[in-house]
Amino acid sequence: MTIVSPAFFGFCALVLMLYYAFPTRLQNYLLLAASYAFYLTFSWKFPLLLLAMTGVNYALGPKLPKGRLHRRRWLVLGIVFDLAVLGFFKFAHFFVPSLIRLLSPLGLPVEGLKILLPVGLSFYSLQAIAYLVDVSRGQAAPSRNIVDFALAMAYFPKLVAGPIERFRSFIPALAAPRVVDNAVLTRSLTLLTVGLVRKVVVADTLLTAVPSKLFTNPGKFSSLELLIWSAAFIVGLYNDFAGYTEIVRGVSGFFGIELSRNFAFPLFSRNFTEFWNRWHITLSHWLRDYIYFPLSRALVRRNPGRFNLANLTLPPILTMLASGLWHGTGWNFMIWGFLMGLVMVAEQIPSLWRPVVSPDRRPAWRRYLATAALLVGGLLAVVIFKASAPTALVFWKRLLTWPGGAFPDSRVFLVMIPAFWIDWVQYRRKDEFAFLSWPPLARAALLAVAALSVFLFGRAQVSEPFIYQGF
Amino acid sequence: MDRTDITRKLRVFILKDILNRPGYPLAEDEPLITGGLIDSHALVRIAVFVESEIGVYIPDTDLSAEKMDTLRQIVDWVMAKE
Image 1 (cartoon, each protein chain N blue to C red):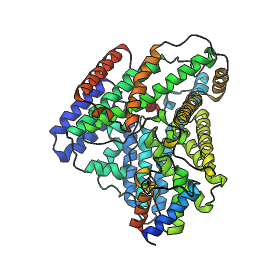
Image 2: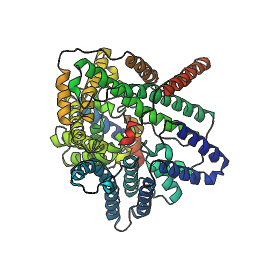
Image 3: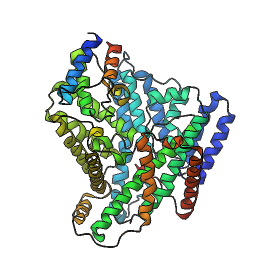
Image 4: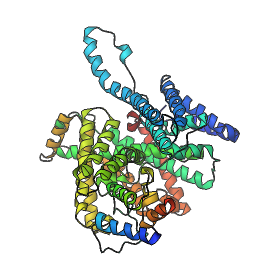
């Protein structure tokens, strides 16, 4: 069941009706059953894996608090288990197709080898690891309620592609009484509307318009086409994932359960360090809290000198390599992660000796130039994210040739306008609910235009599956 | 160590070793992280400084803009744990 589909919204409506008909103490049971039913629509095998991971992590929780015998051993065992499951399916997803290609001509049976990457595994395995680490550090209490814990793992609005919640706050929120008042409903409806516009109007239009061979055969395109289409891809990718997150946050709000924000106008960032604090925030913060900080702290403790090379280079590079590995097991993801890490190292260098000035106090031209440089850097980086290393080289070389070829359809630019406009309105107010401060008439008009656009664009094209669902 | 000492120590460290601006009039409520003045690496250096000079351990999960965005917030956090 895809998130933007009549089936999903029908499912949500049914669960909502039952949810409010149920007594409060049974609502989590209902949400848990609904979450597993939702997961079953992808494959009957996926819930079995989720159930196993839930059982193992729940059982390990009480063994981890300080003072428990062999708690470090249990912690390592839990992390190794979660990573092994994630690694097995990720690597199988990568290597098995090659193995099948190798074995097929020999007439050997290959059907049993086909292994699907379970939807959402990359997200809920990280949540489980964070839970184990937090309990072992004393920053979270081990869960004593299997229903709440299982629901935290499986909660259907965030199951497919996050946000990656921290159980130390999410499980208590599931156990607490929920308030669904007018303010919550208004915010949820706003998120849902903005999310649908991002996904149906912007992302689907752009991602279906981007030529399928853009990242596999860039030699076919002129430099201008490569530049415009890769920009369209980035805006499409951003609105696809941000749209997904806003839709599921909106849906979850109707149940009175708040999900974390995942995007904060990343395309207006002024460097990549800032960008990673604004893009896929819950993953960035996970990587920061469980890889960057422990590693960086251990190195700084050993040598607190500000010019120490290991302190400056290892944490960002290893963290971004882990990010690359999380996104995929191809070499291109590792190269992408390494390059991103190097860029973040380079961004730290000026602050080693030059006086640090807040970007907000820099002249406007410098801020705009920094954002433009970031967007160009993003365009170059997305190439290695999408293409194999040799193809990416062809792509980059081709960008340096004289522009020519046909100018892409102007509708591509037209749909980018609402995308940037939504971000601009929110960015100026530093508030994702900036639209709610508009006069009622303007809000009603905006809602009508948004609903009409979603309806018309939704009828005109097939909805693309969410890209991040594939990670 | 009292609040004034902790504030003074932290202010000197941040201005001299992080911002490279010893004379900058850093206000106690000036946003450091959200204002783009310090990044994750600088935050770790502050945490290790607090650990070694004041003897208070700041967990990784508290090294965030919600809890450590200003000098006042850092000092409040340290005072609460000391």
